Image 1 (cartoon, rainbow, N blue to C red):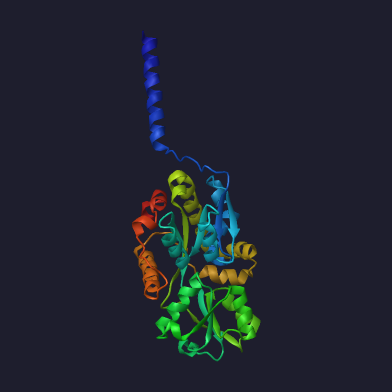
Image 2: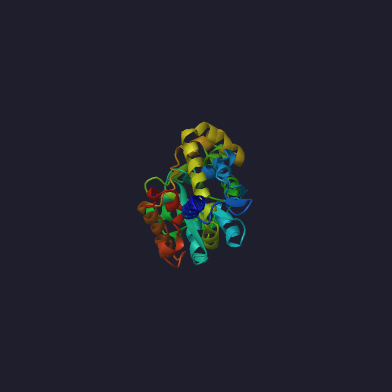
Length: 329
């Protein structure tokens, strides 16, 4: 009898232990796929995820990430909308356009970086200010943050968008077009501003302005809503790995610059200059939402956007909250 009672008690203990484990370990105990494709652009602004891949931070969390590079985050977003990849990282304007265009089928996951000094206006030496662009030709890359930054720069300096001629040009081609005289200037992100000065010479072109004082650019990671619902652990692993990549990059700038520079074929000294001025904070903050709303409201006023961002439906904070409630502010 005693032996039977002991076995009953043992059985109850085992059942209780199994129940505790079932509650403690969610159904998303491990990423469901053997490999996840992360769509990104081709400049050091994508340092956190590049470093996370090369240092093995994602892999240690059970997430095998393959980076797929595009000429910009905006182009990566177009590919993502078309159904390619599992995650995508873009600038702020492409992110907002993606969320609105897909009506919440693709949503924001987390910011990955923000900065003011890496968005630049490059111009011929004779152009000394925004008003000198009136009647002139400015190169922009439509559909990317380049387009928004151009509009913001001109507006901040009292120049109507209709008073400037726009030409849709890709970043590397902007450098050549300005040197050839086909453009009077362009708006883009680094390192293309530095490259333009190197190619044409400081006596012919200069960096007229950065975004400092009137523009903060954000890099943002987005995912499909169904992946978040069905493979939540992949989302949390991605966020954790990106945080580790960001922290490593901030604390080990020289090593991160070598890794990032090699990945994007950018000189390490330029990658270093960029990483140093990037705030690689993934937190979902009131300032982030305010800046993103400001961006979209501005583009609505210029006829470039048709709807406001509904943060409750177009940004999924559950991944950030699962990693740490402190990331939601």
